[in-house]
Image 1 (cartoon, rainbow, N blue to C red):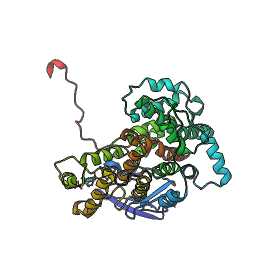
Image 2 (image 1 turned 120 degrees about the vertical axis):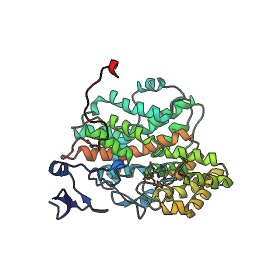
Image 3 (image 1 turned 30 degrees about the vertical axis):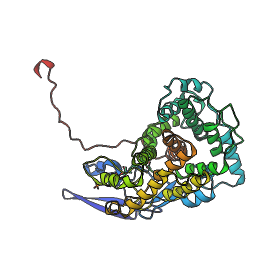
Image 4 (image 1 turned 90 degrees about the horizontal axis):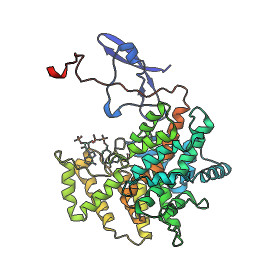
Length: 429
Ligand code: CMC
């Protein structure tokens, strides 16, 4: 029983709504019994004021620009941890000791290959398919290959499916890339760390040896870490909603990938780099800023704004540092896109429109510059986001499935259509 209640008065009757207190963040009104008691729904399209679940995984304070994974600040994890450790943390709630980390790494690396028959599945796609299209299909298709980890009521099978997804997503993303450029698939190498293995699968060719530059692998690993989870965003909510019906984890993650693809969400990294290219030079920036502010123009500055952050996205700060480091390392510090990005950021942060609406650069603003410098085409940016976010989706899905109070997600609506009317035969219309 909540200690505090809020009172709703409606048509002369009062209803007590329990006030729930989270460990951090604003209080939450518990309206679960409202419809049964008062025969009303609440209305919140876009879920701007709705907590859809309890979760102990990730916390965002949008005002402060703070992001915590299981309580640990994202900048500390990006600097001091590494992606697989972050995966363990997100999935299990605590940082692993050495033995736990070794076991986890061992298990992940034993699942990196995909069923050999899946190669034929890839070959069914057109060569010019967007890698995200391929990934939605292939990840959904995993449920046709791994029948022994589909029973969501068996905790062991849930764990095996989770390991498989985290291990195979880089392989699938790299295969989608290789297929799109007409190069042979490169098998995973379990002697490499997670990020190095991904770079190897993307850029090695059978004709010559490929050396993974450790500094680039570190930058890649950081990108994975920064994208690993982000509480109840659109794709995570999609995974939870799909999972609430009892769908298998491979199908749920495919649903998350489909949702992530949109330009308002994970597709923004591709859209942002395309926008920087279109702007092209610093002198064109005012024209694009003016368009972004024009209500009659649908153009938005990609990589700016966020539903939750009303301050700097803490991931963008780390990403900007990484962009500088990577471009320095590759000797392309005078990259014109980086110059445009820095100037755009400066102008937008001073412009009253962006200041008043609290529109700051988000994670996607700098990630594309790093990925492009590493040699990825823009079409691979969102698949890289998807493979990084898989652990977040999986952790949230596991949390939901493990909750004995779990219910199928089933929102209601404010109906605005026609009321009941009689069918009219086609001759009388
Ligand atoms: N450029 C210009 N104006 C903007 C922008 C932008 N990027 N973002 C928001 N606005 C304006 C918007 O027009 C609105 O103005 P008004 O109040 O006058 O109608 C106001 O700011 C609030 O915007 P909103 O669309 O109501 O806010 P939202 O919380 O529904 O949308 C968003 C958040 C991220 C979809 C939006 O800011 C956006 O479209 N940004 C560009 C796309 C982008 O970078 N997405 C990546 C998000 S971070 C990674 C991820 O989540 O995957």
